[in-house]
Amino acid sequence: MTSHGSVENVAACPAALAAREAALLAPYAMHSSASRGRKHAEPPHAYRGPFQRDRDRITHSAAFRRLSDKTQVFTGGLGYHRTRLTHTLEVASISRTLARALALNEDLVEALALAHDLGHPPYGHAGEDALDDCLRPYGGFSHNRQALRIVELLEQRYPAFPGLNLSIEVLEGQQTRYERQQDVVGRPLLEVQVVEAADSVAYDTHDVDDALELGLFTLDDLDTVPLWHQAAGRVRRRWQALSGKELKRAVLHELIDWQVGDLLDVGRQRTHDWALDSIEAVRAAPWCISANEELAALKRELEQFLFDRVYRHAQVIALRNEAQAELRAMFAGYCHRPELLPDSYRARVAEVGLERSVGDYLAGMTDRYARHEYRRLFAP
Ligand code: MG
Image 1 (tube, rainbow, N blue to C red):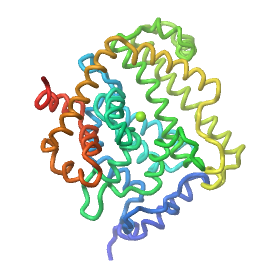
Image 2 (tube, protein in one colour):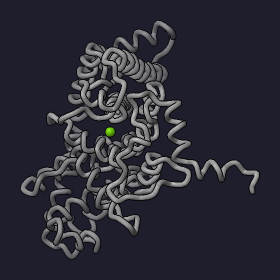
Image 3 (cartoon, rainbow, N blue to C red):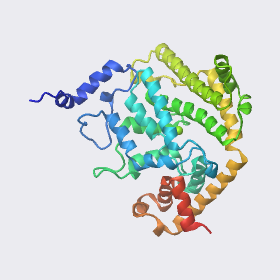
Image 4 (cartoon, protein in one colour):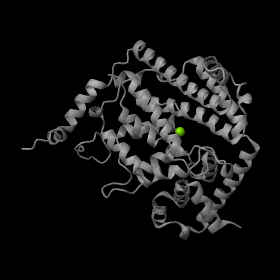
């Protein structure tokens, strides 16, 4: 006999986890005990729940580490503060805040958030568009679908199965991101909806921050955007003397608080009004976790401003064109000389086709590695 209580707790893990979640989670949350499991069956872990295990597999993956050297918006030498990794961590942080306040499954939300951008190729959306063009005759390219390829096939970390063998609920959440525009039957879990909403809060806010730092527009320009103007007005009423960077930081905090507070208000109201008392009720109800209509309209105006002033900025467009030309040259180059591909990608050619395997290889590259390999192998 041991005096340590941990041995008994460990042995009782699935039951202990079920009891913990029954006490903490709402009836509309995804409880670990209701998980549909994994494609390749595995016994429960001694001291981690299934979604904790998913989260850990994601953070230990190569694709996750590479997010540290992938840009959100490709601005090359201009510099941009956020990487895909810091964006992902902001999304995970906001998602967990929402999940805890709504009594949703934080472990699942965290796994979904950490995985949500794994499929991004180098050079941000510029890279995605270029790869989509190159792969158009072979089914195209989407970062949301690529994230599924990564976690189901491309990561080779375990002897027993390809990919990470994540829980069905994590895969389904990522699949929903890919199919979002189509009319999917049944709504996704609230945990999935929370991550979608947090992603939008994070990028709307940090793209403003980074673009200000880069000098792509000024605080005065932003004051013409109603969402910013209203948030800045509230900040100025509290701290009249703030200006410059101090004002900027305070307004960014206000913007996040405003959006998160609104999502919680809307979420609580709808889960109550729509009597969401089970997963089945969530799936049958309309989309639940979203900004109220007024705030959503204000967010769309901000996004249009960002589109015009950041993504269409002359310097950004020039860098975008250069990056896309390099990726296209690399795509053609590897297709022409497959012997340059690493063994693991060459080995998959027979199964998935040369072009798709080249696309997988290019999509996995970081910004710096893509530029390095371009200069080493394909630069004229
Ligand atoms: Mg994102």
